[in-house]
Length: 506
View: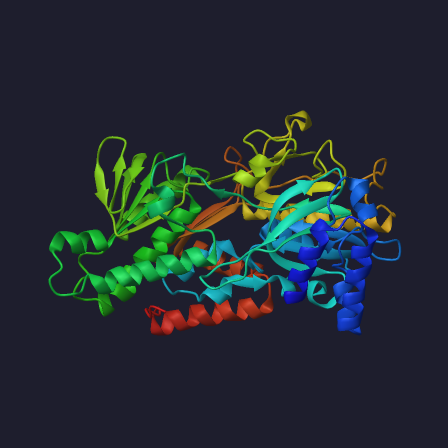
């Protein structure tokens, strides 16, 4: 790291090719063999290269050379980016991934980790397992960093390393030149501008969110058992409020009610009568599901002890939320699950936008008006000129786009279009078409919903009850990315069934 710091001090202020020669000399003399080859990829740009782009010399990955493979840079490790990298052919491309996390999260099972049904590692799949070339190929890398800007004119992304903790290194800034760029940055939770959400609520989109929910829940259970705690304070501490009646909010409420009925009542008998769950939704819960399934879910959640409230949150305070009718709802744990929207970074990009502020794409998932840039997943949407509606922010949409784009980029590479600015007149073949395969959601008590209609208005098969729960578990067990994690999930389910959930606060 000290060597890279020295390079960074040299390169920004050098204006002649002597600086480039000096750096190469340092690399050659100090390191030998494979490590020298590795570091040579990160040499600073020469003054000539910099003047061509009207840029200061920089540290990073420069443009690929004629004898090297073309480089695909992927921003993000969500469903779309991970499926894309899995399908890319490493014999055609060097794959460089930039993301603030080094794993993919299997989000459909994330709610189960909050209450100990599954362990956190069961829903996280390392990117290096999804695409081994990132760890083994000399020109492929994973960088734990955030993209700070994109220069489409010069085929370059600017990045900054992710740092956390009190004693950590300063952020390291670097650049990466690309032949093809895929933006798969996902989306962020929607708060509708409501005051206090970011400060007091917990979202449920990442593993660290689930860890925070679990620690908070168990802490409140233990605090409420301390002598001297007033009855009103116990009721507040043990009131779990979920805002948002979509699949995530409903599934978390169902898992939480199961945890209360099967574990809390046995292991926290002194406070078992105080803990309860409230689900707040402005309209109908599970609005995309069949009416019959919605009514079934409402009945089962109520039977499990979940209190359903129809209302709109107006303000979020440290210990209570205020609804639009003035009702005050005290809480000890607040989980926010009201959908997603484009992140500020996506908004800031000088790229075409689709309705709703996502990055605009055409039928082949290309970003119009710029060369060699694609966007997939929750951060993207069809531009109005395509005549296609913006697809919902669903895992199956993102996964299908990633699979399609991987095949398309492989085809482009085989047709000699892998280099930058080489696909202007190329035939891309069939455009991307999305066909909805249905929706599933668990509601606790060994019951789930399965809606196999292609749209809300279409006709099709819909199931509810224990059989649906079995289908839900079987489907997700087969969809978990690796056999390693399938084994973890199966063992966790079996262990929980026999011994109950783990209540250790770690």
